[in-house]
Length: 400
Image (cartoon, rainbow, N blue to C red; front, side):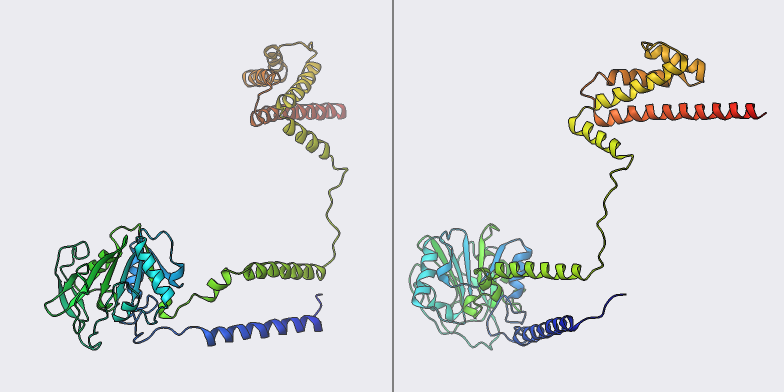
């Protein structure tokens, strides 16, 4: 009958329960709130109308190599070729070091797709402009020049700035009208900058509008081999707790502690279990010799020896029973057995012939050898049955 929990067990269970409740409470209190209503900026985590989760998930569905960038610009890849950085209405201002890192990223061949007035503090050769009223309806802008950016998107819808004119001849107006520019593109070093007046085309609300999706995909690059880094660092997301812990030995230490704790629990549970003597196989088992001999043959790969032993023993029993010489050929032996015992001559002759050849073939396989030994065993069993039947007949005659 199992024992009840003692005081130590109860304390352990109560302590574990308290820790579990505290962990659940902390998770509930400090979990980030789900986005609802207006997020204020096009975050890839936001499913609100002005968020950009739809555009981010769409890139994933289209097999683009896209990921959220939650690190400072100083950690951007050194090899910027084929890399795209999306700065969607950054909510925080960069330091001089961070702005310099973005400039270096572009000069090394990177592409920066920036949106909104706040991006002017991040981009080289960027002149601030007056943003439009955020509560206005998006306006339609047509492509001003043919380019890869406007391919398949002759017009887009976007919140219009009050007035925006390029700062230099290098800055080309890709979309706009007679009053203002809407999209400006210009090279810088080995890279390029594509600057939108607002993030409207990639928001959940407007990405479905005519031309916006094609325009967005053209900006991030037609090649799915490009690596797209969607900045969330300047939206206030500076990496998760797991991202921070992954850079420290704490996770490995926790794993080691967990293994030690598991070993303690397993040891403790086994100590409280019933005490039983270990199960040992008897050394007097009649099959022990057979198992040992079989393992020896298998380990040495001498299946032919096993067939030879079984065949010579079976041959000896037959010639002794029939009074034949030991050097009787397999064919003559099979014929004599068929005449004396009534067995089928052809199958027996074939088996004896195969055993004769296998006993001399050192390359015979284990499965073939086992098949021949099994056939000899079956014939031996028939011989034993005949012997028993003959003995019973003699007993019956003696009784009569």
